[in-house]
Amino acid sequence: MPAKTAHGDEAAAVAAAIARFEAETGAAPVEAPPAVGGWQRAALIEGVSAKQSVQDLEGGEKWLS
Image (cartoon, rainbow, N blue to C red; front, side, top):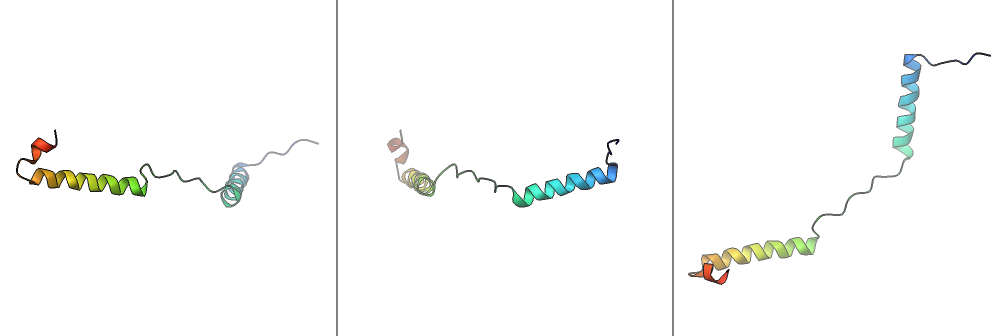
């Protein structure tokens, strides 16, 4: 018995069905953890604002060296 091959439309339908099945049943993608944690981000923001406060003082540039 000769093997049957799928025509273009049939092959596309099979490929689409496989892709849909994988999308619906596959594992959920793992989200990467944030590069900077919440506490670290808050500390960085506070540090930057503190530096600006020192610069605003008279002679503050001397303190930053």
